[in-house]
Image (cartoon, one colour):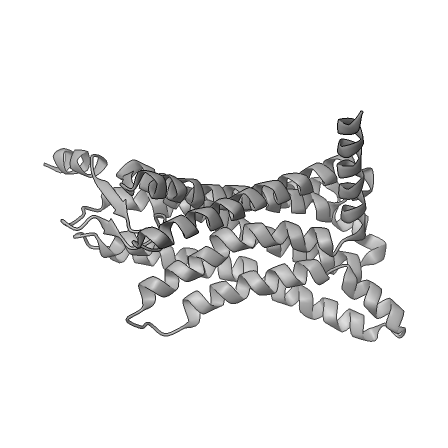
Length: 316
């Protein structure tokens, strides 16, 4: 009986309701998200290329930034291509296996990004608060270990939470009020007991909060204290400029997550979660490369040289 039930689940198809059902809105949404997807891919690939070709950027911070760009590409590629496809074919259908894969990849990217931002905060702490020991603290083996650990922990957490979906059975309604598959909208369609799923998801939230947000905030408290001790205004500006891009990204990203988990529940939760999901799954991958590029002189110079070389080559 259980085997038949599992077989029925694997044959289940869901329908993603998306952001709007109005035909006029659909076309607008398609072009906006297609443009954002193209911008995210272009920006992150250019950032990775710039860091790869410029020896001056072969530092621990930029190694972690390459990993963050890879996460950004994964994050936006999980949801947007399927959403664009659904708008074009108008069926909005996704299989259970496809839905589970989306949940797994989105959770993996989300968890890894939180940990990478924490690692980058620690890197800025070492650079500003321990400058004489920076290359010892952030040596190659440490950087590789931090990045690898972030990917592995993120994958383990997402595998557990996505895997627990396999034990659920689903009711007659197959409409997911979202533009891609996430845990909470899927739980609402389940006829099974989801207490274990909720417990494990809560445990993951606590784990990533403790291992991500708290170390990041602690690092910046030490950074702020060190900057305040610097006597010259020029010295303070120079120290702050080394972490301003990361601080901007962290503030934007963590404020979004804190809003999700800190706000009281309301009847409009589903619509609010969709809007917030747009921020961390679509807007953030577009903004991150822009922030790190526009606020960094070395990256801007490298990108300018790359684009100039391409233009010169085309003219020849």
